[in-house]
Amino acid sequence: MDKHTLRNDARVIGLIGLAHGVSHFYHLILAALFPWLKSAFDLSYSQLALLMTAFFVVSGIGQALAGFVVDRVGARRVLFSGMAMLAVSALVLANAQSYGGLVAGAILAGLGNSIFHPADYTILNQRVSRERVAHGFSVHGISGSLGWAAAPIFMTGIATATDWRSALLCAAALPAIVLGILWWHRAALRPDPIAPHVAGQQREGSFGFLRLPSVWMCFGFFFLTALALGGIQSFASTGLVKLYGMSLALATSAFTGYMLASATGMLLGGFLGAGRKNHDRTIAAAFAIAAVLALVLGLVIVPAWGAVVLMALVGFFSGIAGPSRDLMIRAAAPKNATGRVYGVVYSGLDSGLSVGPLLFGLLMDAGKPAMVFTAIAFFLLLAIATATGVGSRTRATATQAA
Image (cartoon, rainbow, N blue to C red; front, side, top):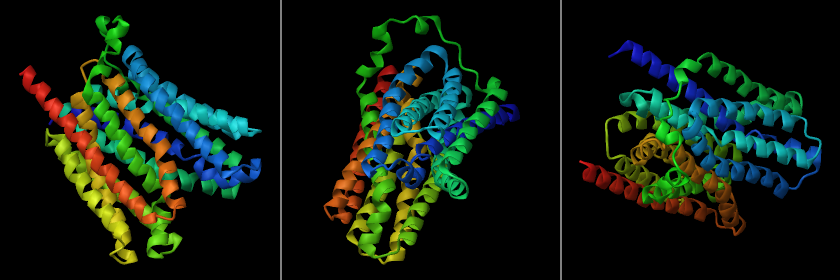
């Protein structure tokens, strides 16, 4: 094994993982401060929810557009700008004097967040050797989960000890510090040269990848999995309390177990993805098991402690599919369109996260917590259909090329 290549791969994977963790951390900096913001500005829950909607709508639209910018000017420059935008957004939020200021900060945060997936995956594909790119995708997913887990603890801890404005100022320091680290190691993140025929291609050529059915199947895959994730993040804990009569603390622990097990599954999924070519089949097997486990949760046929174990297993098998998911997209993306493809298909993630909580909230309002877990299973099964469709088309294209 080439030690120099291994060292460079590890450096790039670590840097991109660090950046992605900050991105996911910013998904929850406002949600963690809702109790303080509600009191400070006398806001309704609907107004608070609208802040998250603004974040994800802007991020979803911006993500699709950011892919084009990545392919035009290079991923490193776009990554640096997104990290700087996150820091600016937290400063705007910390100094907000009205609800409008909070909305403006949420929009800036969504704009900063929008660049990470197209930039991250382009750099990983360009700068990490082929035999270790699956592990790069695995670390990328794990770092995102860690960012989600760290944000509530960090933000509420500082807000409790001081105030919510201080918490946001401290949050602003994180992307500023990481941007400095990325700049220091900028040579490792250098982009591939933009080919003249790519830089000067016509508008029709730039959008030609949108005619590929596999791209929209990938978008649908992310939308469906994000619907399921939105249900788990928003109402799985509440649903467990109502179905199993467990305490909120135990239900929250079940969600924590889901997140930790998901990260473990992603780590294993990196090794599975590195040794396989039919990534859609790995996704199908993992999601099928996760869907069955979610259905069992909704049937309430296990004791409360068993529900905690089942939640962790749902997270574990969902996590296994993560690296194979990213490798599937890599295989389906046309050459010289990596940023655009990742930007468009990952906008499905933001779209699903903006719709999912509303849909599952309606089920909870209707007094049907069991349907929350049934719907999660349903969306995972639909996602299997889109994944197998992508895999079949990719294999058919490869066969024709051969």
